[in-house]
Length: 371
Image (cartoon, rainbow, N blue to C red; front, side):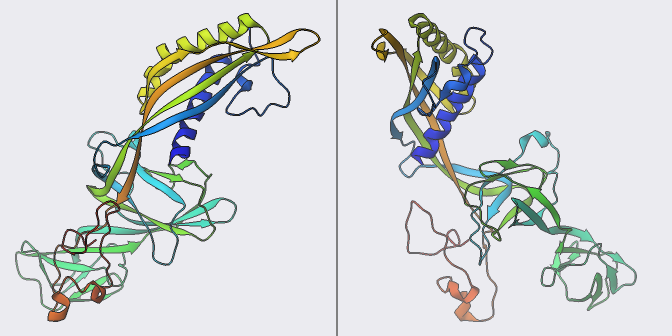
């Protein structure tokens, strides 16, 4: 976690300092020489090296628990697949106007990686409370053809499940529909496959599932699969654990001219404290202090009595980290005729396993710990 977090912070400082200096007429080559390592082919006339210093972790709670996250979208792994190429999934808040519905219909969206950095999306869409179009008191038609085992039919207004048979999208009731009642159906059906979509490691995609941001990591493998769950309304999706890191970033300024070194150091310090501090605060990076270090000289040409002039800037900051553990559908109750299956300790009878909190260990199962 430490090197991932500090590396991201360092890249942000490099990016912002390059944008600041690239238009300066006196130092046109400085922006290209702002780097994280001494990776120059030859020592430049002007340059900056950004390095991370020490860091210490700041816990905000004993077990790092931050709270529960409610969302339209969540990430789920698939049995038989590694399901590791997506780092996280979030709502695309720019597409969600106040009170507007989620752009993609609810369901389970299966993603599979293909060759040439492409992936496909196969949706299994969910339908809730669809009113059947009844042609006779016992026969009705659905708008789509359900996947086997997903169809549930209810009588309204009692909401009692009723018996039926199905042939494609046609439903035949075991008993005629009583006067003054109607039929509602819940089911899932296969949507049209989408793709291919292009992806890059450590980049996001916002087109494959409208309304969702899919962030790809580096653990990509052709053939790997993962599922993205879209719910009809915001519901509990993740338990979030997180905290803060207090760290330092050191900037070494080098120049062939002592006055250029002083000017670059001075203007960079003013920009970091007066401008960049406010901008980065919106990203969770809080700059708490910026200070100038001492100056030094480095021999460039002993015979010509020529030197490099070095200066240093130290930045103290705090930044946040967080990890979200998916929460899947919760089992409220189980109705079964066999008394042996009513024992919640016997989870294997249902092909289930207990939910494991990464920070709190327990040996007892309950309706709260079974997911």
